[in-house]
Image (cartoon, rainbow, N blue to C red; front, side, top):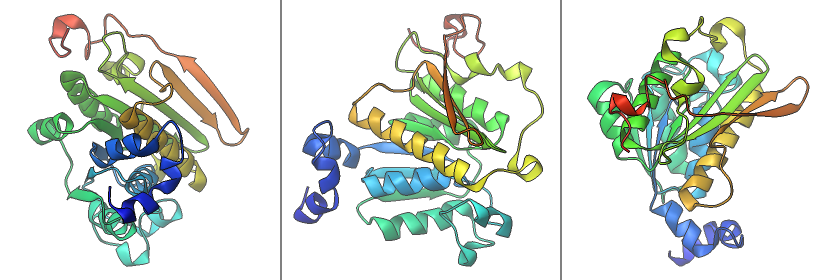
Length: 255
């Protein structure tokens, strides 16, 4: 690190659990963020501020006026622009150390597979089950840690699926792909503005811990947040031996 970086990241370096080695690990890290909306905004901004070296940000959607109530990476000048472009501009202005690769597209198929394979940690900040399951399948195939978040109304949830570990559950162990109910989207049900900030910040926190290799991650736990009651609950998760995404006989997960 140069003198400017030592000063910029000094509050991280002062932490015994991080130090210079931990900060250098962040500067060398590669993350993939799926979605630059309510969850993706705080995730992208915090990871850029923290000095994660290479951040790939994918979102096919454009900024709408209704987004500005909660999607803090965007402003009035961003309305009508692609969300990945808008958020990337903000990230670069915040921290020129960070290489931001914006993908103004819906990642799927081979491009999704390649993007997941190139990442150290994947953060799912999407808002639909089809994308979440596609991202999960790619993470299972490449044994990449997946940090998942969701927020609607006043309810949030965060989970880490550390697919580097043979015993770890995947997203489909918790939410089987063939058993999904109707989508719960902000456009139809509403969402309390700070809730996405709380969940997104927790996703960023878990990703940074994974990249540095500190603390106990949420792997094997689902963290639930009730904003109205200011109540956190944790539910233990186990791998489903019959899971169609990660069971050993599918060949998707290496032994």
